[in-house]
Image (cartoon, rainbow, N blue to C red; front, side):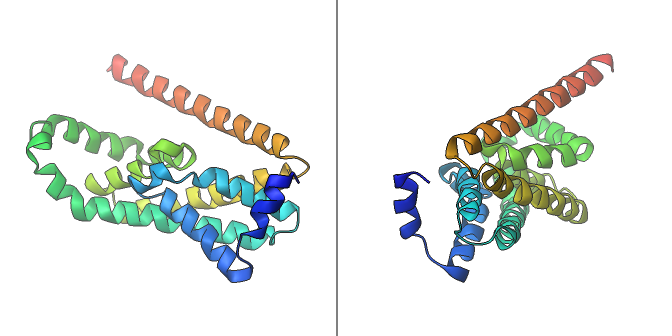
Length: 200
């Protein structure tokens, strides 16, 4: 490890407190607005990297990362359901009822894909579950989809750090490749959606 990482490790808590910190990082990143200020994915990858160097075990790290991601998404969804209708009645959104109706249709048709991409693309992470709550996505579907996405994310991001443990540069390269792969898949999905809409 580089000197700055070794110094960083010394200020981190130990044991259960460290795992709770990991859970909170993943949770806060999944909340609307607050999530934009939390570089959670980078920190979780870093935690995986540190696990490869003896800071904690990878399996509890995966479990707590997954739990934080799921809880954060669920809270975001719950907030959307609770606060969404009040927001919808604000003058600014009252003028955009057509757009809101289109969003509800979009979520009914592509909700699962939206939640998946949001989980792996930072700026959307806290917003899409919130919008899913506003558009009243079925809670059973949301919970099942979010659980699956959270498990995949909770394995992938600590796993990237752990697999790239020989150097931080290798870890960064692996993270960049995953991000590019997800972005390409999103572009392909959006193109497919646009093509279907055009043919209608």
